[in-house]
Amino acid sequence: MLSKKCKYAIHALVYLGERYQQGPVHIQEIAEKQHIPKKFLEAILLELRNAKILHSKKGKGGGYYLYKKPAEVNLIEIIRLMDGAIAMLPCVSLNYYEACEECRDEKNCGIRDAFMGVRDETLRILSESTLEQIMKRQKV
Amino acid sequence: MLSKKCKYAIHALVYLGERYQQGPVHIQEIAEKQHIPKKFLEAILLELRNAKILHSKKGKGGGYYLYKKPAEVNLIEIIRLMDGAIAMLPCVSLNYYEACEECRDEKNCGIRDAFMGVRDETLRILSESTLEQIMKRQKV
DNA sequence: TAATAGTCTATTTAATTAGTAGATTTAAAA
DNA sequence: TTTTAAATCTACTAATTAAATAGACTATTA
Image 1: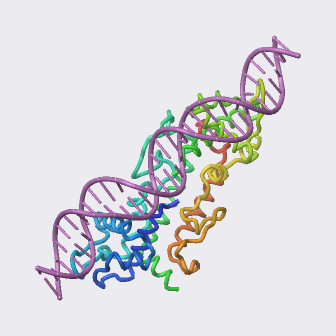
Image 2 (image 1 turned 135 degrees about the vertical axis):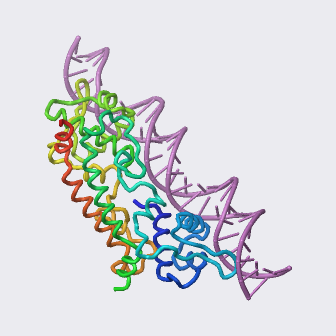
């Protein structure tokens, strides 16, 4: 399951996607409209900014705005940033790999294969799901 | 990510799969061979028994043994039992559905679709992954 | 220079996951 | 019938992670 943090991030990004190239939106507004605790949202937006997905402007009239194009931000990137690995097992993760504690012979492990398949399909589907995609579906 | 509990359950079941129809195996043995804390394993095996995947025999010479055929126990069933929902969002879960707190119009939510796709593919792959499958791959 | 809005550091609270302890029940074998 | 081995049940405790909060600091602009 995705964490609340990750869900909040997705909602905030879609919200900013709707305002792409319309200047900065301040945290307060996003927090209210998306029902996200403001302080929590601050931390989330900061991470997204450090990851170069958002930019921010300080001071009066400041706020956050989408830096990348909505078509170039996908769910994989957001989930990895917020929650870490996509895979269901650490020994199958591409970005957060860790060996299984007790597994002697990884190549010969009957369990891994299934989870590799899941990982690949998940990556495929979620990397096609961009903010643009999500916004389009929202409109219908 | 799967919980340790779930990983332990999978390993214990594969272990019992290897001994299918060879009489009861006691907890102690499984715990030692699979490096699982015994008391924790007890609770896990009990759940698997209540779910009719395992049977047990009390008293001397007792232990646990696979009740279902190895070909009839798949990873979906184990994961649902141990960790709950397969889906990445509650509003997309078949067995553990919950509405999103702030979502007014679920049918019109652009986020859901992607996660439904992931759910379906995950279900497809993991329901094909049975203990029998896993054991076969182990042998190679 | 006052007001606004993001940034940073630290803490607190809540929830979940993992692991432990010990008494009880059951069944087989001596 | 008694002993012993094994599962069962109830109740904790510890550790980890997720979620939320507080407040001081910094930058910007009108």
